Length: 297
Ligand SMILES: Cc1cc2nc3c(=O)[nH]c(=O)nc-3n(C[C@H](O)[C@H](O)[C@H](O)COP(=O)(O)OP(=O)(O)OC[C@H]3O[C@@H](n4cnc5c(N)ncnc54)[C@H](O)[C@@H]3O)c2cc1C
Image (cartoon, rainbow, N blue to C red; front, side, top):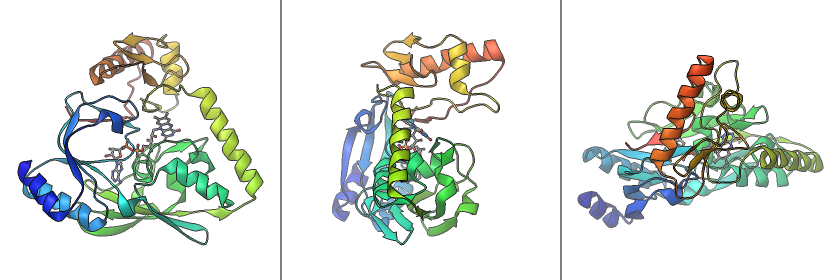
């Protein structure tokens, strides 16, 4: 890692070593990244990744960290957070060309203010556009995949590729991003609408979110909805609301949210996930799958 640090310094690419990851996640748990780099351009991103490969150092992209559970031991490789040009967006008529590091909710607010629609559902969804594309984030019956026109990605060979919506095969809370690819920019198709109507829809979506979701630190829905079921309902009917493990608790407001009540650890949250899964398996014979992603061991 020292060699990599020296090389990044020589290339003037911002990085820090032993960076605690908890503050970079919405759960506020997890140990440090051995190295945390913030490439500002595609060339810098490619440079970091190619050094990692040469030196056999594992790397991972962190968006807003709002769908992630980082291990208490952290991540022994390089965590990359997109900065600089990845945080820019440009309008071309009713299309927006947006860097993958842009916060989805801020983009949604800006789009709505301009009297453009299709992104009202995203007001209040935390995280970046890159993370949203990977997870096919959605709410209120809409999802990001439906409005993606194309995405510029860096593929596993570190070559830029433009992928169409069809090539990304969006499905419920997932996209078919080729293994090892990194989303750099995304073009979204919007349409012109009535400003007041758009504003009202945003307000309504935001209100519903505030009413139905806990305010404490969480990573949103922990489990995917199994076919024909709502994970939250199964968890609630299995009597899990309020169940605790250390400082982690199954929310009393929404049973598919695990909240950090203070100084929860990743181990507390994993133990609660295990308890929840076995309770639902026992009562309904349904195997719950994780929606959140795990980082580190
Ligand atoms: C309070 C709360 C409410 C939420 N509500 C919703 C909701 O209504 N609907 C919903 O769908 N989700 C919701 N979520 C979950 C989360 O916000 C979304 O999944 C979000 O899109 C994740 O984006 P992120 O940038 O935080 O991704 P991260 O959590 O940082 O990363 C998620 C995955 O994507 C990968 N990734 C991130 N960026 C890139 C990139 N540029 N290229 C390649 N891979 C990348 C990461 O490596 C990781 O595997 C909620 C979360 C919270 C905390």
